[in-house]
Image (cartoon, rainbow, N blue to C red; front, side, top):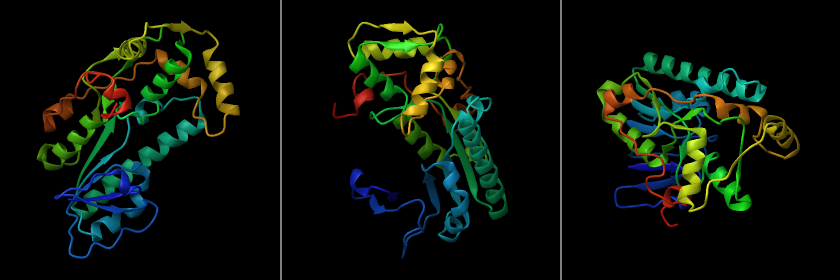
Length: 265
């Protein structure tokens, strides 16, 4: 197995795995004597269309890649940057499907929901940092919108399984976690794993505060919609994935603190 990574030093090499440095914006490295017949791409889906013919020339005939359910949940966002992202993702998926048909490549697109695990995500880990710093968590309204947080390891397993499943060929699958929780229940579960008493504080002006924070904090992804989506259902049926390749993810934070901070916590 060959793994291409921007930071190969972060990946453990083994007897069956060779890790090679690769920046997604550069050309594919030389693969003398290697065939890339089967490939799993974890880069943002919009980076793939410019590389499709290059992947084909390298031997790829089966491709599993990751997109996002944000194309559904953020389609009506009031934020122009989020709407532009949705358009970019949808156009990329469309281009990949067209390329796969023209070239005869078996394509599977996986759309995860809210990803967590290893302490590097932008939602659960951000909530953990806020709770540890302030001892509370602000919410808007009842925070009753549904969520299906999914562990990164379950997504990795799904990609490997889908790669071998004929039923997954040509499909686009939503991948949620093993539980459907309200936003409030999700944050409460984080408090419990941290062994802290849940303190969720309703802040009526939260959309305006997050909009202001996003405007003044360099590189911030905070918007008013971040608060408004606490009341939106962002849960999707993953029954098709279960039927096609046996997708069966774990319950939220079933691994305790290691699910928040990584296996070495």
